[in-house]
Amino acid sequence: MNYRSQLHHARGKGSGKSGTHHWWMQRLTALALVPLSIWMVVAMAGVMSEGIYETYFWFVSPLNVAGAIMFIIALFYHLQLGMQVVVEDYVHHPKVKMFGLIKLKLGTWFLAIIAIVMVIRLHFVTEKLFS
Amino acid sequence: MRSPNDRPLSPHLGIYRWQWTMLFSIMHRVSGVALSVGAVYLVVWLGTLQFPYVYSTFFYVHSGILGKLILIGFTTATFFHLFNGIRHLIWDTGAWLDLPQAERSAYFVLGATLIAVLLVWVPLFV
Image 1 (tube, chains in turn yellow, orange):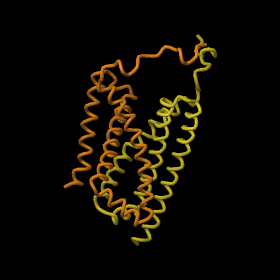
Image 2 (tube, rainbow over the protein chains, first blue to last red):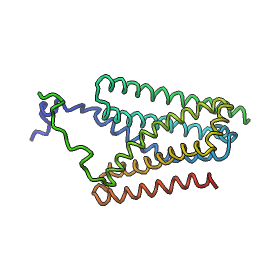
Image 3 (cartoon, one colour):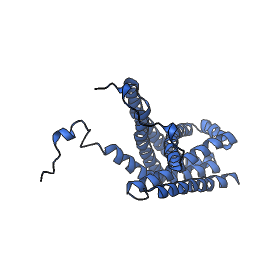
Image 4 (spheres, rainbow over the protein chains, first blue to last red):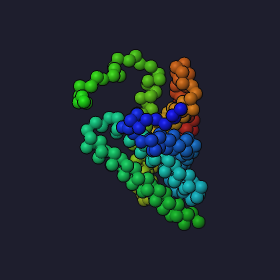
């Protein structure tokens, strides 16, 4: 018996290599965000209820900084994949759609890297301040 | 080949009776878009932290009722998207896919969201 699909059945139906990559990465980042987002919400609520001093003190701990960076990476990766689907679903004009996707892809990288650098900077500033 | 304009359309949203499963599907996307705004807000938050004087203003604004309402909104969207996302992950394993289970898990998501938001915010008000 021949288990291989006929080429004419497979043509025009999309990639056979990376077709599940979007789906898989969305699930993987979702899984990472389950503990990370709960932890982040609790941390943010904590510093907001305590005060300005406590907010800065939060960044002294390398564990907090590492967790925050993991959260930022998972968040913006997940955001990029999710918003990509939203743009693809609702923007029908080909040019507007393409520009939208380019802005989204570059914008999420831009924001994520800026956020990571700001977190690292806060760590070194506060580490010096509180030592 | 037919042009895209004269292809038959599948029945649109308007003809369906409202159901919990449908509402939660839409809400998942709406909360996701809202949380994208929230992510930008988070970057702004980190930006204000770079300058203590600016952050003191940011902090002051969010100790007021309007600032708190914004954060309560983002917290609610976070927990809804989180719990409904877990529901989606469970579906991905093949479980809970039939209609009564899908509806029951929707109630569970609603309850868990309300409890989680209260758990985070009630201590901040008392």
